[in-house]
Amino acid sequence: MKRRFLITAILALAVAVGGWAALRPDRPAALDLAEPAGGAFTLNALSGPVSLADFRGKVVLIYFGYTFCPDVCPTSLALIAQALNGLEADELAHVQAVFISVDPDRDTSEQLDRYTDYFHPGIVGVTGSEADVADVATRYGAAYRKVEGESAGGYLIDHTSMTYIVSADGSLVRTLPHGSPPPDIIAAIREYLPEST
Amino acid sequence: MKSRLLAIALASAALPVFAGGAADDIATSEVRVRAVPEGQKNSAAFMVLANGSTVDHAVVSAQSPAADVVELHTHVNDNGMMKMRRIERIDIPANGQTVLEPGGLHVMLLGLTTSLADGDEIPVTLVLEDNSLLELTAPVKKLQMMMQAHQHNNQHGGTSTSD
Image 1 (cartoon, one colour):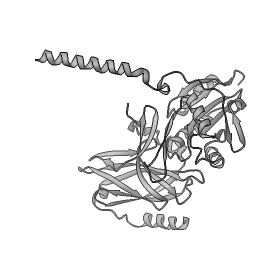
Image 2 (cartoon, chains in turn blue, orange):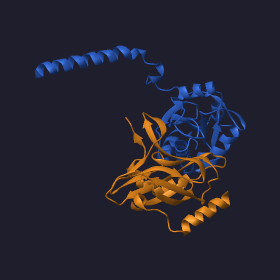
Image 3 (cartoon, one colour):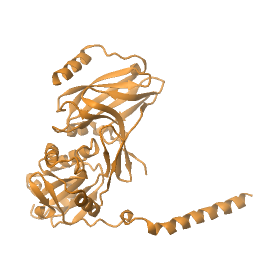
Image 4 (cartoon, chains in turn purple, cyan):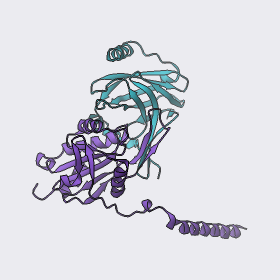
């Protein structure tokens, strides 16, 4: 009896695994664990269009969020600000942080500018059309989704909370996990600072 | 508005706190509200809630004149996707404590009615499961300072991971 149960269990498991394997090729491409490619983008800041190419020669930190974000984004930006404050002046001159809003409907350029400046003047806030922002996010491996009805304060946005490090030649070289402490961010920046600094 | 807030803050600081019931069993520490840039609509209050009794308690809602709506929220880190969700209650186990901190449980302030600058204070009232009230005066602090002051508490792991 026990043995029959075991055989049934093994068979059931085999069917389940087989079914999963058969379904797997249908999974959307976005779930593939390919390395995000990063790359060029142009979005809008209060001062006008901002392109990644504007920062050639600098290490660029990129974070995707939104200013209505009540906790995760301010925490992340404060960590980035603390890291920037921990750099030497000549190092900081070769670093630029970019906050990309995934909420262009609510985040005006003025609001973004006030928000990023509050944390550190070395952070620029940019956004663009929904399609442009989605394109950049996908290429950097960031994800987000609008969630209605969770809070009386309007919609929320679920989002990944990584900090992307782009080297001085514009290549996406590193993805730092959510909540990375300032020393980790500083170490990652220093690893990619141009030799002369 | 500011003067009204100040009046309420002073009143709640000067008068003995009206409490009773479950609220009597709860001791609060590290109460603070996140300072936010001018024009921000939202902020959050954080604290440590210690339950010195042998009975489980829970915060079931919160109020503050500093915001249109006050909700209890938590964060879930779902495979890197940060999800903030409204919750019905924050449990404080008997002889235990619950930490409200950035990235985890928090009292969410939505539709701020006042600016929240470093050094300000706002009243926050927690409603316990028996409708007893825990009235707090929460200092507003800039997060960077909060994080430094709070680093020793990292082991509480405010951010839960579901994977």
